[in-house]
Image (cartoon, rainbow, N blue to C red; front, side, top):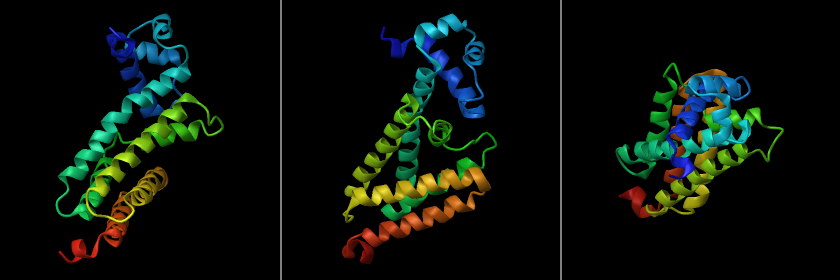
Length: 197
């Protein structure tokens, strides 16, 4: 069985995910992760060479679930593509109201590692953000929109701006305002026939 599918490895990553997301990577020790997973530190180090590798695995493990969640919000959006994009923000605003919401784990981790741009976790975060941008660009390209990839990048800027401002203000109104701005950007890039239709 490949190591990535090992139940013990998954148990360690699940424990790390709970602790790193709740408390931040700097405040959580390897000992705490091992204890949360119900394993010895030696067992943890058998599966991960270092805490840095464990942090990267935590973020890599969040990549597909987060993309799937955003894609689900987009698909469930009612109306045209502008409303589908806005739905991502509407559902994100709803998620931010949950008492356990602590912001974007990718951005929070990158902020903690700002002086270490080559860190494996920073690279994992960059991959996730690129994966989302690529997915969104592909979705937009199927809707007769001018420069869908450039538009996807602009929407990513709005989303990550929301994550940043929410760490300061904790006010979901900012997320909803960004959603309206994103819908406006989408409409500005729609073909004339789409807008009139």
